[in-house]
Length: 308
Image (cartoon, rainbow, N blue to C red; front, side, top):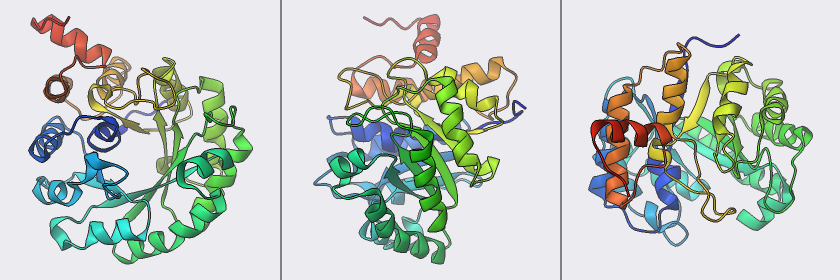
């Protein structure tokens, strides 16, 4: 059942960098994307078209999209929170146009109200015209179900709650279902239970996992998904990102760590691990810290790098 090939969606440039307090120059974001492309990543979440009032780090979204190279076979996605975000992503025409958009919703009413000040059902109603407009523009729509394994306000999240949102996304025509452990509390059997609900409504190749490593469970959770045949995962180079609900905790699982594990299992990713480590070192050096990725740090030390 374990797949022979896995597709990784690199979310570091968007989900990773938006958690950074210090500004990252547009040219450095573009260079990070270039390095990720060169390392073999074929799915890259580049930026988000959100208000700079809420996410200042993404204020240069159009400039980044206009400046990145568009090599054949690489898909570039952006997160949009509403119709204004979609319109901003499309206003520049082919210059800024993504290949895919990402919409998001919370598995719990508590998180939805605290995060976007509306109910789950209201958030889906807002996204319905966005999905329709994206499809009319020829874009694929991917969803992210936040807090699918645990909520910072409610606590435990049931598979029924996950399935409720899965069905709502399916009803408005979302093409791909991403199940996200936003606070990193998921463990393998609970992850499998949530994934089973997603697979009731979406085919295997349109379900993915997005795991934060807050409690060190991300690789185990990915393995649990692999055992189900799931072969799409979001990862973040150098472990970029954080968990705002657990102070000092790591965020997205590091792409380097996942690639190392998959290579050790004989699973093909098409990614050059050495080039990926270089990309992680590049952005980590700019941020003034060692990579969060254990594999990245270990291989850099092996090359002679010294970290405090």
